[in-house]
Image 1 (cartoon, rainbow, N blue to C red):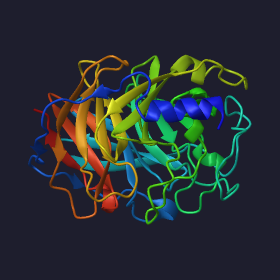
Image 2 (image 1 turned 90 degrees about the vertical axis):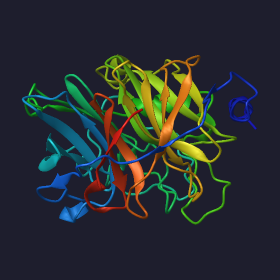
Image 3 (image 1 turned 180 degrees about the horizontal axis):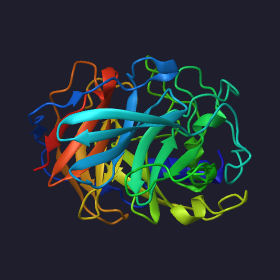
Image 4 (image 1 turned 180 degrees about the vertical axis):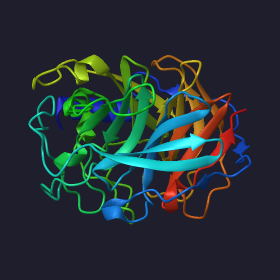
Length: 355
């Protein structure tokens, strides 16, 4: 085993810097009324109804309405929506990765490929998280091997951002920027780098594969926080923090600075499903099964955005449709949050009130 791999194993088993541990009991969070309605359906892959919503982020309200962006993980782009009260109106799509690698993507494609299925086709982004920090929306690919066939697909190793105006409209034809450098950060993150481009557990697989994949993202303006669904071990999961300016610096040089890694003790078998920034600057952490576990609840925590901050449990999400997987959370203000779900039509949006 390499020195990096040995260090990663020691960290995963708790032999290095302690993870933030949650204290206190969790309570059930119940959806609040009235329910949300859709004026039309969200668009999934090839124009089919969307049933794989995996991320959402919203701008501050403007004239009583919110401009938001959602991502369906089988698409090559994302879709704008407008929230007016409890009515959601789908808007335009915006393509992010196109049909092939772009020479304008910043940084250099990953050179490491440990996915046992070899190289796959460049197609969907496998978008797993959306964030907003003025004047940009950010959309992150999974940065991991495909779950079914363990393929390395370059299209999923892209971080994109869209520059928007005060109304949430893309600014000009060059509004979209893409970068490969988040992959560099993952490969330099000593705690988790040994799991980068390693096989994920399949939905019906055993617990052995523990490859890295991103499922949540938050941005506070200068820092990007990538929440990892896996690796997860002994109740510990991880957030990788990287500098936004370095990720999107012009040119094709690779990222050289190692990122900060924030370990979180969120419970055995749990991984991060999304992140958002709370009004007080803390991270809102949505967790769920790291692999295919059926006994791990979807829960919310609040965590300081540093390695020594306190982790506070908020509660377990209840009230979703059977089979729904909580994968996106947006902060609406005044302790209101909107959660969207994978495996249900149009994300099955539910609003919750934080205690």
